[in-house]
Length: 192
Image (cartoon, rainbow, N blue to C red; front, side, top):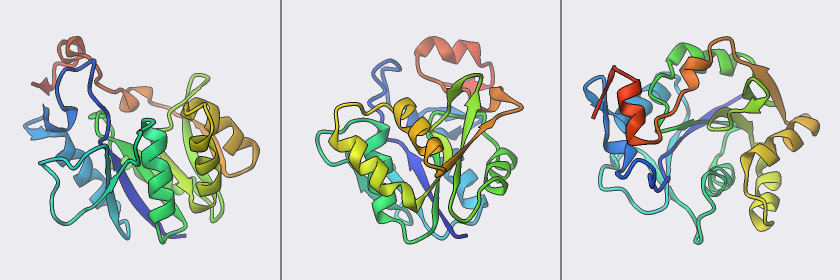
């Protein structure tokens, strides 16, 4: 098994009102923190997915721009699965500041040669901190070409096809995301 990594940083941040990638958590911009987590895993390559080229993009990461019109995370995942030269891609959203290297390593340990893993929080998939096999590329292309771009619709189909394992997470707090300005007050360790 080989793997690449993908930082999903293409959200419009409409609810937050500013680019989440530039917001600070624990004294560092979220993008820097998330890229460091992914780098610590030792992927063959790290990609950054965005709608437009971000001013903050470091030179040592490959940018994958969504093909217009962007359909949200499915656009970035489809592009990444087409770009990877590895058997899997580990995906992490820029707005999940509580994720740890240990949790991502736990996900990697659950992957098999032909199957990825998508965490479950209750009965809902968390597709933005997950690992997808390269063999899911056709599934993502087909979904992007259709009219239902929800990853909540795609993940059960991938599980049914044996391409991902659905894994109930022991600590859902690691998968919290920051979406609205009010979320900042809810997470005292978050520094705006």
